[in-house]
Length: 154
Image (tube, rainbow, N blue to C red; front, side):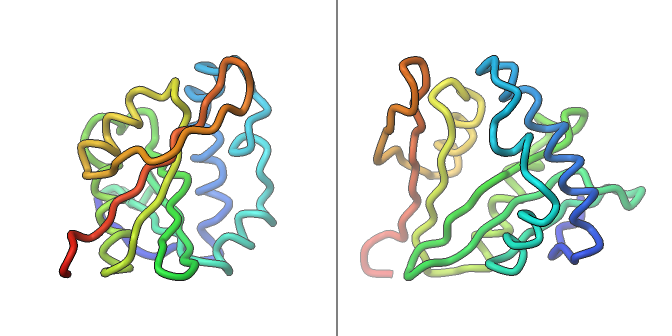
């Protein structure tokens, strides 16, 4: 997989991949109106203007993964790490996460996921992220916030 910055012309394909990739989250929560499934192309364009969107391309030139991020102060906020369902479990998500971190060296990294997303939590924790906050969104839904900081003295 080759990882590069997304261009405006890629956003429609990334949004379609997002709709596909988030089906498992929707099923997990029995909620098909979650933000990633109702996000518009215009909203994704605004995210591109605000920060960076990376894309992962396979050998055929198809976008099979993506991740987004924007900085505020000394923090890179990372979101919508997605990999095509056919390509999950091959390390592509970890590669995308490392790539967006590498574009923003020396910062604190923050992301979040649902407490029900055990696979996501496992990946993030394996990549060095630590839980620092939980927010109850609904009686059966908690959002877990994770961060990755540079070791002291660096």
